[in-house]
Image 1 (cartoon, protein in one colour):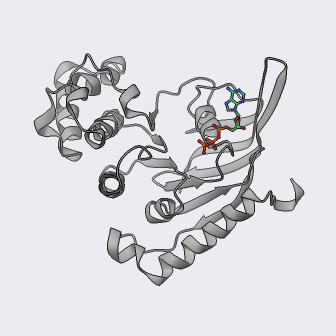
Image 2 (cartoon, protein in one colour):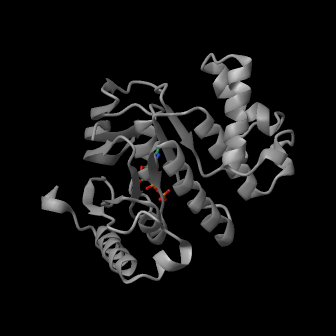
Length: 264
Ligand SMILES: Nc1ncnc2c1ncn2[C@@H]1O[C@H](COP(=O)(O)OP(=O)(O)OP(=O)(O)O)[C@@H](O)[C@H]1O
């Protein structure tokens, strides 16, 4: 399968105010077209830094990132990002429909094409009846579904998600996880999903990249050999799931204790 996202020797050191923080060191991995890959790691490991570099929002200090063969030097056209803070990512003065429409306008799509994509995205996330509401009239989980609809309507080649469900309740979170898997199946989009929740990473992903503590490198690339059909009760209570989650849990514990691969 074609590599769509190539991160090679990525490094990022923050400098300023008389101090320097080496957040990411020599990070290398590839994501193939249509994959769903999760990233977990200890708090402060550099997960958000990594995603901000990939999305072109942050300058790197070394290495190369390319999307579809083109070097990322600023926000790439084919990428969409869903952040944790749905409240801050939607414009409160615009309706749900207008929020989803904005990036489609920037993409230069005509009115009828925009309308069709908005309707399909709202249908996919189950929010057809809320098209004309404003974000602040919706629950947190619904607002995050709007953010997801906006991202998928844009039809990105890669969808980045940075702890998107950290601020919603457990039941909504489970529903949103299933929504991501369903959309991923339906749309064939490539997804890179960052979470601090080990169970979530195993439930969602085809692979889990476990990060070391700072300065970040990949500790292990863990394949998730679970059936493609997943459900919250059956999958999570299966022996195979438990085995993988235990392995990832132990890796994250090792990462916290400062374990690094090959002395890097
Ligand atoms: N703007 C900045 N200036 C200086 N240091 C920063 C900046 N942003 C992040 N850092 C540092 O870089 C390291 C990685 O931060 P980052 O937010 O990427 O980690 P994270 O894995 O996303 O953390 P968490 O899981 O807690 O959200 C931390 O030590 C953090 O203090």
